[in-house]
Length: 633
Image 1: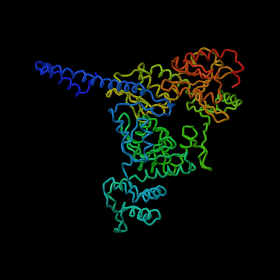
Image 2: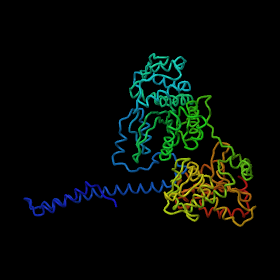
Image 3: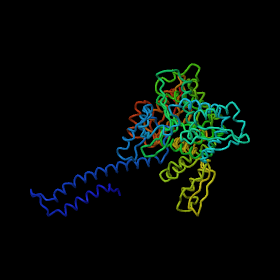
């Protein structure tokens, strides 16, 4: 039950009580106090009604978000302003946050974030420089980055003493460090900038005195890396682009942000490059010290897709062999200092190639800078697949290059299709289980509460068996004491990719194969996942499925319920632009409506069908006479 604000209820009760107590009192004009008291009641009731309406609106948002968050956002979620849904925030707070006084240079960043229901609370909160030594600090951060391999032991020693609040100590490691070129300049810069001092000690070990000033402490324990990140961003942009008014870079550090659902978090470095957002987090120390933070950034990236487009973690001490696995598992680009500029450059070039970056960014690239290339990946699962080779050869005659992005091994095709049918047809009952899997710590264990001991016929048990068979978990066990189903080594990132990328197309594929059940092996269709096409003009598109029946091919764009209708239409248009004939394209959604069909009329020849209708269409076409138009792809 929704209860209005106590203040309104108290006002209502006071008015009624006062009216009853004063019912016998008369004013000089004959009007009773009670009458005046009752006159206040309609206004109070109006206030209560208004508040209840606001509560109901919030509840509608809550229900919508609960339903929407039950499934991961589609991999094709559009990149547009206002995509974040408003949540519970006290009326007026958004306006107040949008008006927080900030440095003028952050205004474009504020405007961008506000349009996505994110609000800057403060900028540059942990200042490490003053106007007097700002240039010196910046140059010192650049020097540390360039010579970090030599300076790392000294910086680790300083961090260790700062963490223990010891500001004076005797330097007992590598005494020869002070006579090396890098070490000599390092300590000279520390003294010149007032960050530390060094005096002669006994037995060849100098005495070190660290500054107790908070900005100095912050700089030496990691702030230098954030300042270095800013330098590397500016250098990368300068190296990529000619000086041009068409290139706009808006950058700020140490942003404290509050979201529309009143969640607070910080961004070490955030910048907009021609309208595209980039977010960088900086970490010093061993990987174990910030592993949990990485998972936190992954959660924020998934929760606020507008921030998740380009997220980087710059680590000063990460082992090079760990960068790729961590990047793959978290979806965040993890880089060390030597590789950061290259990683950032590749992301910028990818954004230019995607066409999402505002302005004519490609024309502003410096001569000699690497051109943005939209590489079609080499064949993966279908390297030796005869059906894929037939498709590639056939489209080559029409000037269309073909590759595949499928990552599912062919030997798992049938199992994946069957699992998709199992999960899709029971999605309402497994939704909570599904959400827990996708939000679990990647590689960790997960406990699924269950009120009874699961047997082989229970839904949870069957789901766990599927997960193990497909490699999403290493094993499972029921704990009688905890009354939970324990899943071991959950591969949540891999499972999340499967659900968002492969689940619905795999269900469609199973419906097609089921339609052909009982036919000879030679009559069964060949189904390929995620083929990629590019024409001579460079237009590229991806289909969810390509189906070979007899002498013809049909290409399926499968729009699941989480995909925005406009994104669905965009994918269909991209496939047609890449050179695939409309008559060969099937658009498949769970339950096509009249509105969807009306929007597809602008794409003549494209059929909008349900999975059952698509299976029937392919079944009929496989036994019909192949027309000349079908043969000319």
